[in-house]
Image (cartoon, rainbow, N blue to C red; front, side, top):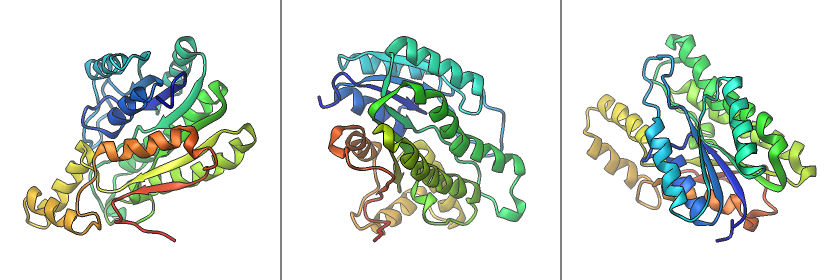
Amino acid sequence: MELTGKKALITGASKPTGIGYALALKLAEAGADVAVADLVTGLEKVSGYVSTGSNPELEALAGEIEKRGVKALAVPLDVTDPASITDLAEKVKAGFGSLDVLVNNAGVGFGPALVVSMDEQVWQKTLDINLNGPFRVVRALAPLLRPGASIINMSSRAGKVASPFMAAYCVSKAGLIMLTKVMALEFGNQRIRVNAVCPGQIETELGRWGWKLKAFALKKTLEEYEKELAAAIPLKRLGKPQDVAEVVLFLASDRSAYLTGQALNVTGGQLMEL
């Protein structure tokens, strides 16, 4: 229960198969009160969009959090809408008073396309959610962060390794890593740490959606593609949301008190850096 007494906020958390959902339960199990926020109303249609969460899913997650003996708060959120983010900040302040952990997990992946044929709306929407969203959320919630707090941005292996047909996603996640580094410098004198997590091949709805597209292009079944993908990873398996949750718990806790400005790979060894 190393987070007992601490307050956490996680965006993009309502999907039961997603990383954000696993993060929320992990931090709750560690003793934190947890606010969860997600897009639960219709998103302007953009070709290739996977799915959003729902209000029943978000409320159900809050119920699961409370079963861990801590306080929960569920707030609908659109990270592209400043008014929605202001509403989030007001509700977190009213419900929790302050924050010790802020996880920017809300993100999106759209259909693949070459740069020269990519719809500009897809490009703009991807960056608006994946990069501008965390910027807006941090700006609005910063007054609630206590000294010693931890900001954790969910980037991706794709933010470090280029992938054809995924320019908008790769660029948005790379930009989030740089935003993490800049914020680490700016928040340092307040003893607020800022780090990013870069998951690799994780078994989520978004992950499987991408794998299906690649399997189809290679004229393989999803099962065949997943088997080959796992074989190419040094640890010989695909990752699970819980694998990412364990790293986020470390970054949220005092065990990482001297760690800031980093982008930690959670890839089973698929990405190794000096």
